[in-house]
Length: 114
Image (cartoon, rainbow, N blue to C red; front, top):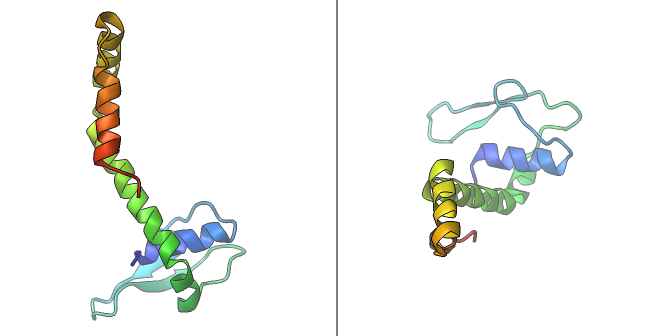
């Protein structure tokens, strides 16, 4: 199940709003009473505040987005910094090895998108 913020982002994107500022557009609150976070304030211009049913309808798309973002973050870390990648590419071109290509392929294999 996706987080409330992910469902809100997906709902807004489906309604033509690309970016949601959770400090201005939508204020979430969690009273720590076990019921979880809820929408305290809705200020998204041109888009009505979603019902629970509307948020539940976008849950699977929001969940997929969360999983893909996690894979992207893991891959970013696994690829290493740009300097290391450029060094691998340079040495691949100099001595004919495929260190960089092999590294990228392994990161992608170890961290599939879905």
